[in-house]
Image 1 (spheres, each protein chain N blue to C red):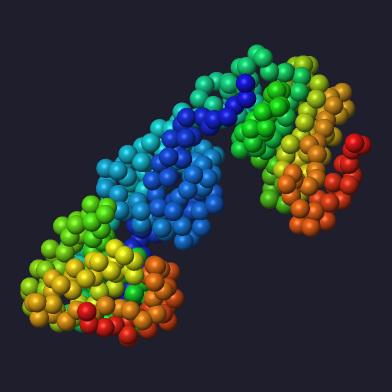
Image 2 (cartoon, rainbow over the protein chains, first blue to last red):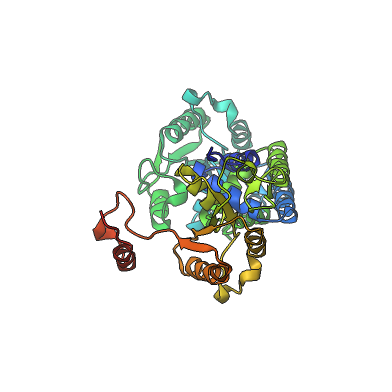
Amino acid sequence: MNIREYPEPLEIIAEQFRRLPGVGKKSAMRMAFGLVDMTQDEVNELASELIDARSKLRNCRICGNLCEGETCDICADESRDSDVVCVVEDVRSLLAMERIDSFKGRYHVLGGTISPLDGRGPEDINITSLVERVGNGKIKELIIATNPTVEGESTASYIAKLFRPLGVKVTRIGYGIPVGGDLDYADELTLSRAMEGRKEI
Amino acid sequence: MNIREYPEPLEIIAEQFRRLPGVGKKSAMRMAFGLVDMTQDEVNELASELIDARSKLRNCRICGNLCEGETCDICADESRDSDVVCVVEDVRSLLAMERIDSFKGRYHVLGGTISPLDGRGPEDINITSLVERVGNGKIKELIIATNPTVEGESTASYIAKLFRPLGVKVTRIGYGIPVGGDLDYADELTLSRAMEGRKEI
């Protein structure tokens, strides 16, 4: 009888890695072999670093950005414009926006999209906190920068419909983002054009 | 001031993932974001599964294969031929060999290669245990199946020189054009090795 299967603990390790985004079957197994090549002490250290670092991160209570304290550096920065809020799906999109170095407003991180097909409604993303922020009266414009996917678009429409009646200008970035793409992979020029070419929705 | 950096704990998580083979900067960060999207409980569970599974795996005391007990299933399998031992660099190579379903001998896992340039000598791989196995007198042939790289080759020569004087037949797996491959795409070294390794039909 030839051995056709990996030892079970190795499969378990690979399974854990597969829970992470972008990790397929083959790379999970390669990573599992790498983990087994480490000593038990090294694995313990790696695992406890993950636990420890994760526990230090929380979401900014104002905008939802990742941070270590109560509020993030952007919300705490008095020099930034409080009138304009850029609404993004996730922290990766926020950081992509920050890299264009021209947007000086604030952000709101939705933490996902509305996707009825996947059973995700408005209550599953950070919309209530956005309603509160707008309710405080300072925000004049919401720039919707959700990804140009079906879910991103319907989330954008939902937000537009919700806030337009409240007298808030709602715009959508548009120019230059390849349809079906991901903000995180867009180059800086494309992103700046998208900001400049935003349109009211 | 725009935010250009990831929060430090996020960087720490990505750094830990980068310790694993095949994980680059971008994929490590994608995985880190994925980990942060999990709840603390989920992260704790993932981490403890890694620790637990790793602790269950050890190397077979005879051949070096990964296993859960003292000896691996292959070494424990009395039906397999003890005369022939296939020497491989790592467990992945062993499993690749097992998949061909025709080799019924035993294995010896070196756990690496000899590479003087990287400061790895014969004492850094499992050669002593191979000497012991050969010393027990049953082994008639060692099939060296290290990878066809510079390090794999010099490891193969070293083993051949060491065991030939002991009256053991030492063979090297054949080089040539991969089945289904195209001559046009084969490099010159592979082609000349394929010529050398020709057989009468």
